[in-house]
Length: 442
Image (tube, rainbow, N blue to C red; front, side, top):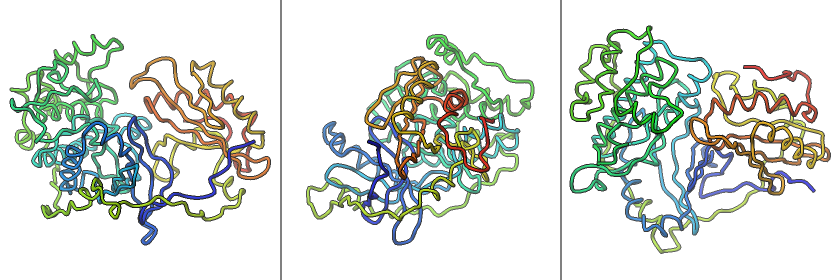
């Protein structure tokens, strides 16, 4: 028995859902296509019951309504919100250029002019969001995407806080974000200003873009916190004096004396070649869809229905793959690193599953098998927790299978190191079509 390609595709309203772009504890993001126009979108899918259970309806409505006001060219747009009986669907702008982190992972540090260009876009975007009462609180290269033209797009406001949620003392009190990028005052858990903490994270990002590595990085968490709280870091020799001066003022452990956005905009290093974006600021946003998503009236709910997909010949599908090589993790034109790949095999499904398990276990991965899906989870914690990889075996024709492999947790660079060794253990079962690139390459 084998797992077969689904006989139908899911349609939600006017959108046809496609591949999974990312997933977290409470949400999943899928590629979607408007069936009327063919336009591409990303749809964030959230369990409706989770929001109701945690009594977060008003907070959720307020946050989404606020985010719909954010129409900055360097921030991912929210277009509309829909709901079915069980799920909430947030329709987002689809960005196909990958993460800014991918560029660093593949090519290394950026030159100063290129790093400054991205930093200028980031600062303008974050300052604009703050002016609308939105604080990100998890700014890092992995949450900065690039569009087709190479422009920065700030994404993932899942950990953001909004002005109405700030306590009476005017400070935020939720410690969140990725430890290497968070400000000292966030770690101290005594309340902090969302503006100054985001500025700190922007400074860490600028350092990473120019250095190719983190300013604060310790395997021991307490050691890391100590370095951050003392702003204990050094500059590489290639940093210019202007860049050093600005980063020093941003990575000031005292939020009261830390540089402000207005001061950053006046900084000589920052202003070099700076061209602020011009865009329409429209405050007239219709939030009827947000209210309707939680209205008890059934007429507001959309339905999920299955539709028959466009048929694809098995060998057309196979022609889209080139064996199990690291080359498949890189876009042929854009040079963007992916976090998913696939390969074809003539081996029986049970043998493919066994081979995957045999290849993963010696690398320190625990294997969880459910039907013809597997989750590989590293037993050691990396830079961003345990590396987690999902695989699934599909039958596309008798004696012909497609195997999909995708990173669902952990560090992207660690995933690539794992992939290089892992793929070499599967050579016996990979079907090699003509022109297949043999062996992993970086």
